Image (cartoon, rainbow, N blue to C red; front, side, top):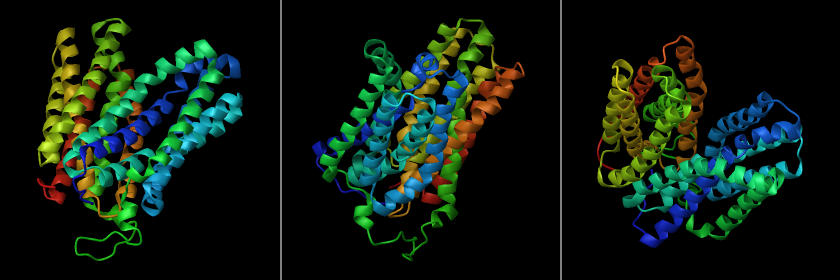
Amino acid sequence: MTTTATAPLAQDVKVISLVGSAHVVSHFFQLALPPLFPILKDDLGVSYTALGLLSTVFFVTSGIAQPAMGFLVDRIGARRVLITGISLLGLSFLLMGLLPTYPAFIVLSAIAGIGNSVFHPADYSILTSSVSESRLGRAYSVHTVGGNVGWTLAPIVMIAMATTIGWQYAMVTIGAAGLALAGFLTWQGSLLRDESDAHRGHDATSEDGQPTSRFSFLFNVAILASFVFFVFLAMGQFGIQSFSVTALNTIYGVDLALAGSALTLYLAVSALGTIAGGFTADRVQDPGKIVAVTFIFTAAVFIAMGGLELPFWVMFGGFGLTGFAMGTAMPSRDLIVRRATPPGATGRVFGFVYSGLDVGGTVAPVVIGAFMDAGQPSWLFYAVAMMIIASAASVLVVRQRTGGAGR
């Protein structure tokens, strides 16, 4: 991994803001279409199942392309890949507004998915090489929160624009905004260093200084354990986000709005925890310990939520506690992957490891959905707890392989 020298605060803030803005846009585009489904159903003359397929095409394409984009980041540079990805997203949604047919939407959703696949490998490569070592935890926290902001804004903005200027103009507008951001990042490109700048012409090396294959990271136990960590983390997170409202509604008989407020609390407090976690990660020399402690605490709370007959207000508070704890761990999570990454391999390692989120997100709904179908909604909390414990165990493997404390 690259050790970044201390840079002026103003420069770090600019880099973090630029990369954070790109992450906001990526998550905004991820949820730009679903709020418009009721309108698109009539205008495109298709079913909700067909519209749901658009999101499936987007995310499957993104998940498949992400590891390849990691290699491309290390090969030609994160700046080029990031700007190209944003351009593809912007162009795809702009053309959706200009070509309002379902076949066009399918093709453009696939292209947009390829554009979406660049952000994890490119963003982390830039942050790791451009931001001062002492501020990386906060940089990662802003990056994570930026994604949550994009998800939050998408339904609000898209519905507001669709009802005022029409959905086609709304798509053209956000597409043009994406292209404008790509242009702005091109203008500010000198600030966005990445590992390809520092290692161009040099392959990654092993600890004894010998050249290694571009695929050698696939045999690195710490990196494989990081991938497993993200698989189980995604299963736990998607389990809570997808089924907690249904579980609370079934267990307590509360209406969906009240049950949904618990999930809203979880997500909102998680964002606050991520900000706090950025400061913590920059001060504590052992990110693996932070993740392990917060995850074990979270799992214990979820087990209590599933096994004890708790009043709803206590369950509500449990969602707040677990959301904050999980958020606190997120910047340290990224530092753990960074520590396991060989020099010159940030793009492909982050691209591979973060594809675990797509794997976990694909598996979790099926597994936990079976519990719900079996009439056992409380098992949701047990299942999520076990997934989080598995994530913590994976972190301890990474921590042991990378030397524990110290950067």
